[in-house]
Image 1 (cartoon, rainbow, N blue to C red):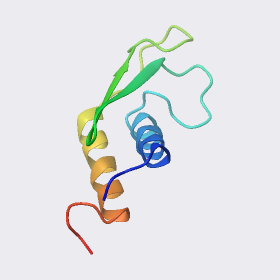
Image 2 (image 1 turned 120 degrees about the vertical axis):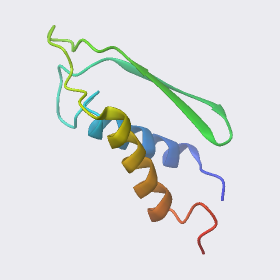
Image 3 (image 1 turned 60 degrees about the vertical axis):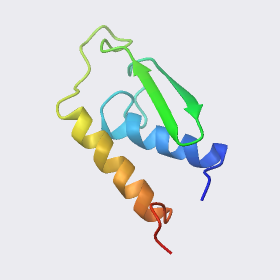
Image 4 (image 1 turned 30 degrees about the vertical axis):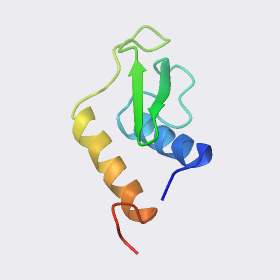
Length: 82
């Protein structure tokens, strides 16, 4: 299954939320950009300093991102699941 732009946006928003880069409803969160550079890949770059000047709370961000991607794959029946 190939993801469309809306799917990629949904995944990106979930990752930046759970990692602490831009939690939902946080107007002072970090600035970030996402680039879909392959059909099955996404790169997210972000500052670690929030717009309000504080450090972002990024504890276990890689684990949180991996978990969000796993949940997304499961919910969207990716990885060969029917």
